[in-house]
Each structure stands twice: as C-alpha cells, then as structure tokens.
Amino acid sequence: MAAVIGVMFAAGTSMILRPSLIWVVMGFGMYSNATNLLLIVCGGYAPQWQAPFVGASAPGTPLMDPLPPDIILTAIVISFAVGALLLTISYCVYLDSGTDDPEQLT
Amino acid sequence: MSVLIVPVLVPFLTAILLALLTGKPTTQKALAVVSAIGLTAFVFWLLRFVDTHGIQTMVVGGWTAPWGIAFVADRLACIMLCLSMTVGTVVTIYTIWSVEPRQQEYFFYPLFQVLLLGVNWSFITGDLFNLFVGYEVMLIGSYGVMMVGATKPQVRETMRYIAINSIGSTFFVVGCGLVYTTVGTLNFADLAERTARLSGEQAALVTAVTMLLLVVFALKSAAFPLFSWLPDSYPVVPAGVSGYVAGLLTKVGVYSLLRVFVLVFRQPGHELALQVILVSSGFTMLLGVLGAMCQWDVRRILSWHIISQVGYMLMGVGLTANATVATAAVAGTIFYVMHHIIVKSSLFLIGGIAERVSGTQELKRMGGVLDLAPGVAGMFLVAAMSLAGMPPFSGFLSKLVLLRAGLGGGNYVVVAVSLVTSFLTLFSMAKIWTYVFWGRSEREVPAAPYRALMVPTAVLVVMTIGIGIAAQPFLRLAADAASDITDPRAYVTAVLGAPRP
Image (cartoon, rainbow over all chains, first blue to last red; front, top):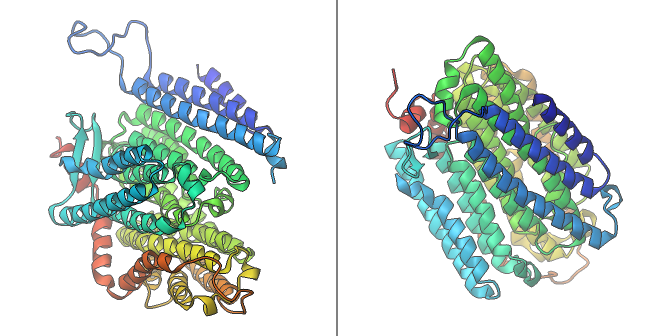
C-alpha cells in the first residue's frame, strides 16, 4: 500500500509540474486521492473489524477507529470543492487567453 | 461556554444572508457593517472576559474533549480575533465606497464574510484537523475576493495562488494523518500532554512528522524559501480588501506556528523546528526588504514588506528554542503581530487612497499626492515610520521587545540582520514618500473622490500611535498571553479537565 501511495504522489508531482493547467488540475486529483489512501492506511483496516456503533457488536470484538474515515470524508468534500473551482478557473484562463500554458500568460 | 461559536457563526449566517440579498447593494452594505461592528464588540468583550476569568472552552455536540470538536479561547486566540474583527470592520466600512458595481455583482460581500469566517475559525479552534478546515474556508474566501471582478491578471494570479495553496493543503492533511497515527490524537491540549511524555524513537518520529506541518505553515506565512507566491498575488486583490488580506492571512500562518510549535508539540527534540524557523527568519527579513527595494509599484513594494515583516515574527517564534527567553520572545512576537496587522492594513488602505488620488499604481507617475491630499500624506508618514520602527510608534516598541529577547538568548546574528532590515525598510518607505507624495502632479484635482475612505483608515493609524504611546496594557496582555503558550498546564487543564494520574 505504501508503494502505491508513493507512486501516486510521484505521479501527482510530475503532473503538477507539466506546463499545462489541465494536467495541474489532474495532478491535484491524484494528490488528494493519494492523501485519502494514506489516511486509510493511518487508521488501519482489517476485514473482521466491526463498525463502532454503540450496542451493535458483542463486547470484545475489535472495532474500526472512526476518526480517520471522518477526516477522509471532510478531506474529500474539500478537495472536491477546490477541484471544481480549479477546473472552472482553468477554463476561464483558457477562454481569456486561448492557452492553458501558464508560461504564456501575460 | 457555548458563546465561543459566535465568532464563527455570525460571519457564516451573514454570508448566507448577504448572498440572498445580492442586487440590493445598500441593504447588503448596511448588514455587513452592522454584523462586523457587532462581532467586534463581542470579541473585545470575550478578550476582557478571558483575561479576567481564564481560558474558556467549548466542545461541539456534547462530546467530551479530546474526542469532540473543541473551540478554545485563550488570550492569544482572543487577541487575534480582536485584530481580525477590527481590521475586518474597518475594511468593510472602507469598501462601502471603494467597491465597484462589477465586483458587487460577483458576490463581493458574501465572499468577504467567508474570509472572516475562515480566519476566525482558524484562531479559535483547539484541534489540528479543524485548523485545516478553517484554513480551507479562509483560502476559498481569499480565492473569491482575489478573483472578484475577474480581470485577466486577477484570474492568472489567482490560478497560481490556488495551485500553491492546494499543494500546501494536501500536505496539511497528510500531516494531520501522520500525527494521528504517531500520537493518537489531534486535539491541541491532548497533543501537548501526550507529546511531552514521549521519548527516544517515538519522539524523533513525531519531530519528523511535524516538519511536514512546518512546511505548510511556512508556506502560509510566506517564510523563506516559500515566499515567491506572495508578491505576485497580493497586488491583484481589489483595494480595500487587500488591507485585510495583507494584514491577516500571512499572520494566520504565524499564529499557527506559534500555537503548534510552541504550545502543542513538546516532545524532546522539538526545538529542531524552532531552530529551522530562526534560520529561515533571517533570510525572510533580508530578502523581503531587498525585494521591496527593487520594485516600482506601490502595492508590490508593500507586498514585499509583508514578507520582510513576517521575518521578524518568525524570529520571535524561532527564539523560543532557547527556554530561558521563550516567554519574552513569544510576548514580543504577539506584540509584533498586533502592531504589524494594524500598520500593514493601514498602509495598504492608504496605498489604495493614494492610487485613487493619483489615478495610477506606478510609483514613478504618481507624484504630488502631498499637494492634492495632505491628510493622506500625514497618515502614510505615521504608518511608514511605525513600520520602520521609529519611536514613538508601535513599531519601535515591538522591535525593541524582540531584540531584547534575541540578545538575551545570545542570537547576535539574527539581531544584526533584523537591525539592517529595519534600516532598509526606512529607506524603502522614504522611496514611496519621495515618489508618491513629493513632486508635482500631472493633475489639478484628485482622480477620484477619496475623503470618505480616510475615516476608517484613520482609525487604524490612530491605533498604531495609541499602541506606541500607551503601550503598557498591551505589553502586559502580550506577556500574559505568552505565558499561557509557553506553559501549557492551564491550557490542558481548561480543555481536558483536572490532570489525570
């Protein structure tokens, strides 16, 4: 899993460094997904872990830690909003200047 | 104490109402001003209350700390809230006259409230992940006000600003996740307690993780070597709001550094981060002022000066690495933040007025504002002298406190650098003075009406004189706030209850 996350971050970085806004936006998508995966790994996961509801499972069964999924949900919402904003602005830049290469904007 | 949600709730509700009122500019402006003044009065009351009754906390949703979302108001948080709302109110009043119809159509007022919401949230939260959420709200608000009106340069610079900040936010979430894995909590008080008990490999691991957060906060506060985004993006912010953006946003980064690296992470070896900050502060000050000296545009000069001033505050944060002067250094930083937010905002507002008077942003073509608008020139002189650190204004005292902490800790190099920077700041301010205020204007009358804008700006200018002359209560407040930060016992007890065995 760590290797997958590493590769995703590396891919995201290389995409962000491309001279094209649409690649940059996609790079951020990659980054945010890599982050979410990393948070899952942080929280730990095993199939036999139960959902942590009060009274839903017998005492002594291992429970899932609910906080990392919480954080992931919030992070997904935020990265979704920022991603949408980025896409819109990239499109505005394209409409304004006819190019999506940040180097050529004047 | 459940009223702690008010500084977050009021801008939130106001933003919604203002968005619904789009198309009725007069009602919008009235509502924005009333809401800002009301909230300012509230946060000043809160500061007074916290100062006499100690740290107040509130945990959302009936959970107990450290599991619920904690809001904590200690002196530092209240001071920052007061500054945020004072400048927020002044800027709201200033924009009554400075905002253009086109900007108004693009939801200017709701976006500004979102910005206030994010900044207040970042100050009052007591939880690392919530700090991230506050940051995001603040950033989305700042993208909005930066874009408002959507001219070509605005769109281009905002794109860059969003890109760099999104990278920062990603690392922030990663940092939160790693802190949670290594320490097992995200609540500030709980973190402070648990990290102090760590040792050996665990402590080193936490130090390594905090370096990620250091990069994030250094990026937000525009510290060396992560400042290159600032001088391009701030000049495109519409005049007026630029006062708030310039005054507050980088200081949220400084506040986070103070909160997280001085109060929260206390594992053995946490001084490493502070030493990195200290080294970075020297470069930040010097490169910031050198950058300012080679610019020929008022807003750009002032933007570069933000970087150099952030260097001073970082110096204060960095000096806490030496435990003997830690409290003095934090007190100096807090006092410096108070001074800086007020002066920097007023300079940006005055710059905006000078642009209206002369009809241009280019330094070499401005000239003669002294003849056209002598009052503006007077206010600039006070604010500029205060920024450069001349007595009797607030800048002198704030630098004095920091330098004494620096000399007490034996950090002579950074003290020398800060003195050189101070001198160069004076030089750079003299350049603005010479080109903008002296000389002969091409015009007979001011290019646009400006007198109404001077009233809110004058409030800030008077405050910088006031803090300089009647400094004792402010210094006392800063010192008390500093001892809350350097000794976490009161904070931990206030949030988690009596110490556990």
